[in-house]
Image 1: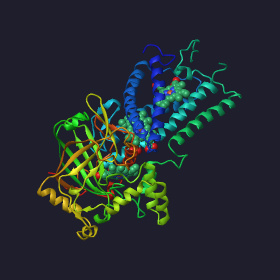
Image 2: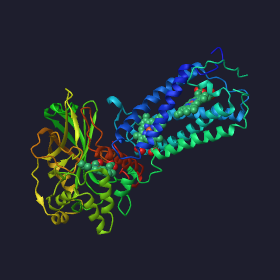
Image 3: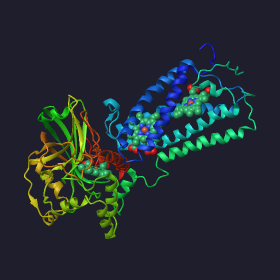
Image 4: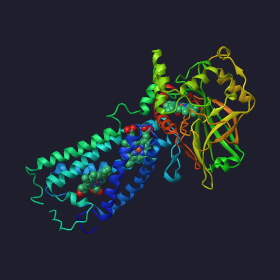
Length: 187
Length: 350
Ligand code: HEM
Ligand code: HEM
Ligand code: HEM
């Protein structure tokens, strides 16, 4: 990278918003499906597995793009604690995006379920059945899922805080809309 | 954009807005998860209704808890291809794994006290594609809907005799099942019972034609009726002992018979049998070749979830398979987590 970018690249912004919608859907579908015995349980869990595996592929693409394009700097006048919080929370969000689908798959493999996605796509098992592994992955998927949702809420609150209260350029760096007006220099 | 980076007094309104967005999202999440609607029929409530007063059978299935594993072969005769493009209907031999079981939440139940017997079955195609099913011996199910099944469990668990009466007046279809339970002959062997899917499924053939079907595994062994008292005398675990010696001396066989619904048949209600004259297609023979105790056996770790289906078979408008899948998943989660309460023998493998 020769110059520091002012905004995330369009493809990065596209992926961020596409994945945000899908992940929020995943979280709601997850807690919705495990609390119902209605017929919609079957389509919900099919969507959950299919979308979850698709998100695993997307996060890998996204990480590659992140390494290639980098990220715009945070505002210089942002207090150091907030900067640290922003960096840590983004790291954690990436962590959840990678770990959650892996736990979902691992949980099914360790319970000897065939993993069949939408369209009959079959994912071969990479782990043998194991009560111990299943229990570990199941608990992790459930509790990390709840922690993921809490962090998404915090992230949402922070984004709105930047956009509405601090009125700095942070939201604009990820805004889904093309930016017409000239960005202010960060320094 | 005025004064970037400065928090202004007018921001109080925005703060309230942010709090409302976050709080509203959290509330929507809690609602979706069922935390705000304790009346929703969840897998947890279904399992609670299955749990006997003495507590759950730790490490065991939450229903059909007593059982024994089998392995063998499904010999497809090729007739099923006309109905479904499921690979295991193509003439040939396919490995099977299954479990004979009793419809009780007590893994130590006395055989002669359990009216409903079942079979869990998995047939694997050459490429590993699986078909799982769990069938029982009554010719129709006790109730019409999963909700009614929950009500039945709750009513049956009450000491008050009025509870069952109230249940039956609200679910008159139960009378037919009660009559079956009272009058149907008992047999002295798992090998002499029929196991019925009861739930309907949709078969799709290679041309894309669809048929709604149910199926049964009909024993080739002649059923010999035996009095309940006589069965009781043979011992609490007679059925497992009997099937073990019986299969050791000769493989046991069942014919898989598919019944095709006609328009207007009650496909969504497993408590209603279809008329006797419906077309029946024999699609193959189940051959049980080996019996193994459940504790270290291959069926222990399998969830015979009836919605694990191959290409060419899918669920119908019957509401049970979805409910069963959701509840069996949770039952599996729990029993796997409690495996320590049902320890394996850990025989060293050579
Ligand atoms: C499931 C939901 C979401 C996930 C997983 C997620 C994830 C992320 C991640 C990992 C970053 C850091 C990008 C990087 O530095 O490479 C980021 C940045 C950002 N996100 Fe999200 N996000 C989600 C939802 C949202 C929502 C709902 C909003 C706004 C209302 C939002 C606004 C932003 C903004 C403004 C940035 C830029 C921060 C900066 O410039 O450092 N995100 N998001
Ligand atoms: C971004 C990815 C994912 C997220 C955010 C997510 C989230 C969730 C949540 C919130 C639950 C409900 C947990 C509970 O309250 O009990 C859940 C359950 C579940 N998820 Fe995921 N999930 C993801 C990916 C996957 C994948 C890829 C699979 C499998 C291929 C999967 C399989 C499951 C299963 C089987 C359950 C039910 C667990 C049980 O109770 O037995 N998930 N998920
Ligand atoms: C909503 C109604 C039903 C509920 C809540 C229910 C509940 C359960 C549960 C919790 C298990 C244990 C699953 C496991 O841990 O692997 C089970 C097993 C079983 N159920 Fe059901 N069941 C229902 C309907 C049916 C129906 C309609 C049939 C038959 C047509 C059936 C036949 C069986 C059989 C044969 C097993 C034993 C499978 C095995 O060997 O693992 N059940 N049921």
